[in-house]
Length: 578
Image 1: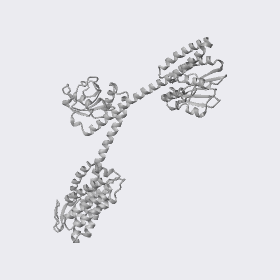
Image 2: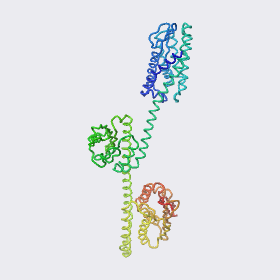
Image 3: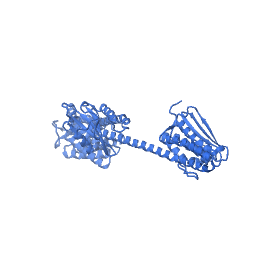
Image 4: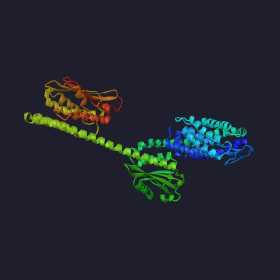
């Protein structure tokens, strides 16, 4: 009995080979991890495990119950012979991994085959094989991975049931009893062990591949995190050098280099003494990769290194692209082509795509910044003529009635325009400069309104050093005078407050004019609102520039009621916490 058990365990080597081959097939991976197999997958699995069961039959041992002789290979059986085999392993695994349909189908194929071989146990073994498939299918759990202990116990149970079926159906009973006595325990143990071993090998191979894939993914994410900040500046000599150092440290390569379309931007690793940075591209294979836009593997001959004994025997050259156009290459050097494995090629392909995407994002970010600056300039340009036309109209009305006053206004206007021109060439200014600009504007407006307008300044010391977009405060003050004071005959007042609070600098412009409805106050910054005296763009543009530069937290806040005045304010974050 012990010899029989040892021999059957030795035969499990065939199963080990089959198990490894199985890991190469996608359908088998689906059986292990997929929640439900489709019809095609079920049919494929049924045929495969049915064939597997047939192999288990042929790899068994033929036992003659009269002479007790054991034949190491199975062929057609006579009436006194039976088979000690591992057929049940394939059938049990079919049911455990694919469900009762796959188990029943595989059991039917392997069972019918066993029946055709003959022998006094042909019918009982064939029927027991089908039962084993159904039994394993009962234990199938679509949302759970089969455990090794479960596979052993179910395999042993299926083989035990086969022994029972042989005793119940095989004739004569004396031969059946003798057979079970000899092969029963060895087959129960061997087939239980075979089911567990088969599953262990498959899980080990797949887990190792998944572990390798996870490590590759971690490495790629680590490289992405380290290189992103440098590639934001585009493909330059500095960014290429830093990225090459990162890649060389992370990957098992002899050297790493990056080029643009005409020269080597950086070379890190072996051969840096003669593969020099900032020198023209010298190899045709690199130009070929640039022209084709595809990954190229270069042998030592195609590298064309002029230095004898160069340690760089092979290279993988991957294109770097922006918007589908090649802008450079990423080159990985190895000792020989033998080091360039499929896993290495897959990683390099992923890295070239990753770095290309980072460069494309950097280019998109740069374009966004340019567009943002252009929008700010355009918004500023819209505001400056708005005030100029109003002032010229005022001067024009005074030329005939009060030439002296008109001349004073022209002088004030020249000061204002000088200040206006200096700030519109900038994208940012200080509150101090902006307030000086406003005071030049108010000098004109106070002269125009004479005794009807009083301006009050409430400025906290140290609050004027914060920065804001140019021409932000003046349109708010102009709005207070132009709209708030338009029907005021006397005692008009505009108050400008600037102070720090809660790590922000707050700016408020209040007037005691006619005010506006709450609905209009809510709408005024969301879109330009045309009025009788303008196109409603001034406050909208101010709000737009503030939110572009500082976000929604700096948008204009408007408090107003009809005939109770208006307060318009905003806040900007402090550059330094005081």
